[in-house]
Length: 241
Image (cartoon, rainbow, N blue to C red; front, top):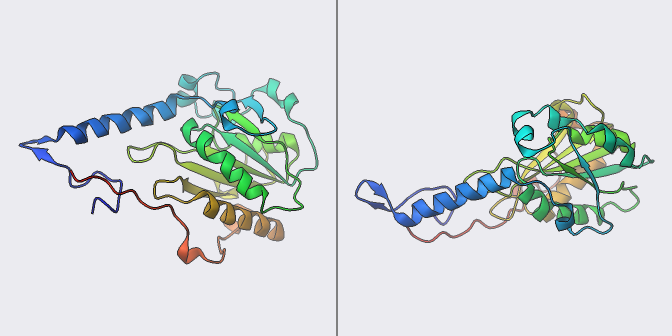
């Protein structure tokens, strides 16, 4: 069973205690999850060309960001002027969320895979947002004048996966949009989650379908072909306890 899941099952025991190797593995994964939450986005580490436009939410630091989710949903006023307004079809925003590690490792590849599948679409410059919650993408998309915004954001880390990415799609973004008005792809990561290629195919399908019906959220149903065989990365084989 341990070869099929990253969950902590079948742990070795010594008397009433958990084995040393499993205790150390737990401490390592706990430290990795804490690091994912406490780290802010490094725009240079994204390796994008041209470099992304860097903005920050109204949460000035990580401690404030964690305590005040509302501040992470609004853009710092001074940053509005750096966003070039245009006739964009879609804007991709990379947000650290609760795992800058996920954003830095997976978002650039996902954007590249989507770009190759969107010929003819006018793509806004990529924006990297620090101390960002999902809804921050709405204000950024509105400032850019984009018809769609895709927020690629680090998801809350767990003790199995600390670098899981989420993708949130919203039509006609603006401050005040609700979760019911956006679509979400979650668990994008290489540890048995949704692969970058599969996520790009599904995200592009949702973009194209959303443009056809003029809606996202609960009005946009995920009816992409091939859903019964969604491509996921292989689950790791863990050593015996």
